[in-house]
Amino acid sequence: MCGWGCAESRYTGPLKRYSFVVVIDKEPEDPGYFAYSPSLRGCFSNGDTIEETRANMREALDQHVETMLEDGVPIPQDYVFYVEELALGVPA
Image (cartoon, rainbow, N blue to C red; front, top):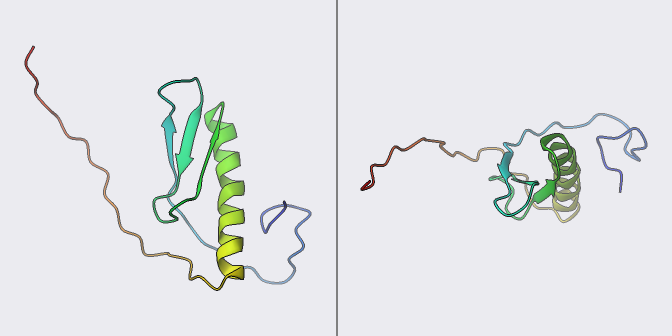
């Protein structure tokens, strides 16, 4: 499927731009990576490398947003989240 972001896109005219935070995590049980967007629940992808995961996630975002727009669902753009590093002491 080719959405807004590719050369063969069926969309013409001006485009509205959306920005999404994407988290890419190392898969704990295999050599690949897992990606998701905290602001778009249910939108995720994976890949063997970070670059492949990023490309796959871009496609997943494109398809997810396209479906939301077709269904008349508003696209969230005000999702607030915090990333913190917490130090923890455990018995040695």
